[in-house]
Image 1: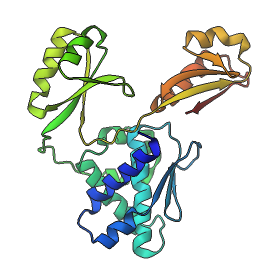
Image 2: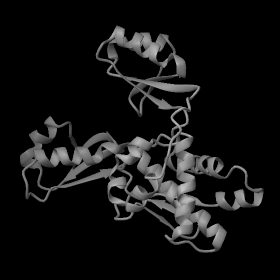
Image 3: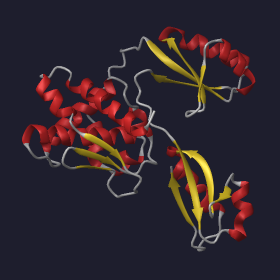
Image 4: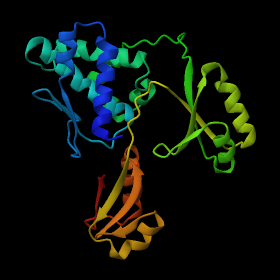
Length: 269
C-alpha cells in the first residue's frame, strides 16, 4: 500500500478508536485533515498547520511514527474544538486520551515507545506515559505469529498456511491466542534456532524499504563499502534497508570508514 494512503487509513482508525461515539458533524470535522510524510530530517518530528499534519524523520521506530500521527491528530482536534491549538493543557489532555485509547487497542507498542529515543528526549511523552496503566488481565482472541531464520522449514510453513511478508521479512499467520504457545513449540522443535515473535492483529505496521546512500571521498574505501553490502551506482554507494534500521546502519558504516574524509551518509526512498 502507498505510504500516504496507509497513513490516511491509520488516521481514520485512530479517530474511530478515540472518538467513535461523537456526532457525525464532529467526526467529519476531525477527519478533515491531511497527513503528509516528509523526507526531511528536522529537530521537530511533526508539525500541525491549517488542517495538515506533517511527519518528519521517517527513519524512526514504528511506534514513534504512529505517536507523531497521534500528536498531530491531538493538535487538529484541539483546533476543531477551539479554533486554535498550542501545547497547553487542553492539547495535552486530548493527546493523552488518543494515545491511551490507541495503546489499549494495541495500535502501537507501549514497550517500543517507552524504549524509544523520542521517549528519552521528549519530556511531555515521558510525563504522559508515566500515568498509563494497562489492564494485563485483558487477553486477545488472536495474535499474529512472525517466524524468521526459517529458510530450512519454509515449505512446512507454506503448507501450514503461513504467508511470507516481504517487507517484514517474516513468515506469518493468525492464530487463536490459546494456540500461540503450542505452535511456537512445534516450530522450535523443527528448527531450534528459529526466531519467533508475535504481534497484535490491530498493530499499525509502519515500515518501508529505503536506501542508505553514501557520497564524498569514497574511492579509496570502496572495499570497506563492498564488504558492508554497498553497491555503487549513479555516483553513489547504496544499500537497501528498512527505514527503522537507518540510524544503526549509519553508525556502523561511519565507524568502519576513516574519519574526517567529508563522507556523507543519507537515507533515501
